Image (cartoon, rainbow, N blue to C red):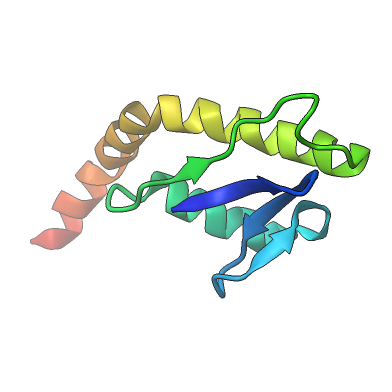
Length: 98
């Protein structure tokens, strides 16, 4: 699913209700939702690529580019991130499992 989208010169994101919203209205809860989806191994997290020409609204461009860079970095390190998270909690899980 495409969670960050560019249409008609504006940036959009998908909120927790599945609605497409303009990127300049994004809130902390929306970013946490997107992070959850990006790190979920059962979800295909997709984003439209950004260029100088496809977003005309300057506020949208700045916000979208920032989010795009951060999510691209996260997705490229997704497996390492998940492995480190699992290793971090493995000892605690084993301790309280018994």
